[in-house]
Image (tube, rainbow, N blue to C red; front, side):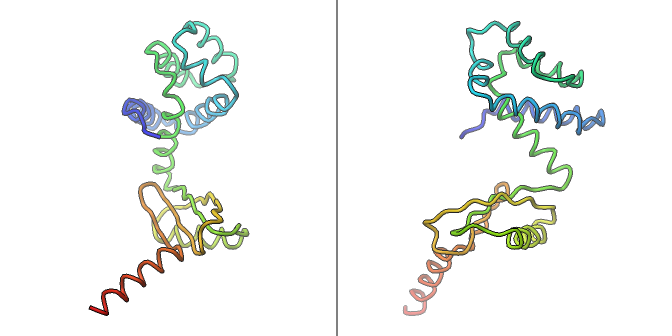
Length: 179
């Protein structure tokens, strides 16, 4: 999915404000709550709708959020006034990435051919932590089409330790030695 550049700007501004005010935890909590509400069927479409009145959207947010911090509430109202509530999922994702980076935490999507047990997942998290210098949280996925090994994505970084990739590298190496 392509990100709207405005989502990144809003998230960056919210992050800097929260960090400067020492309210990162409150913002993170409140934006996670908004993110959870957006997972409910129809809510994201309602907030993105140009037909729904701004006051109805604001009333809805007021009812579902339990005492958000005043700055978060003002931020949501600003997004509503500017008809940017549709950007909320992207803003929340970018904001969380900025918070994680600030805290030295990275999220890794790891794909393997078979399900990993907890020991394997922890070993991979430790190794990726050594490589990145950050505390890595592993999100494990399986892909039965993989021959073996693993592929890990941490932000923009891709670590391909799949058997397929190793076979391709071996093929190139053998092709280069026969010339």
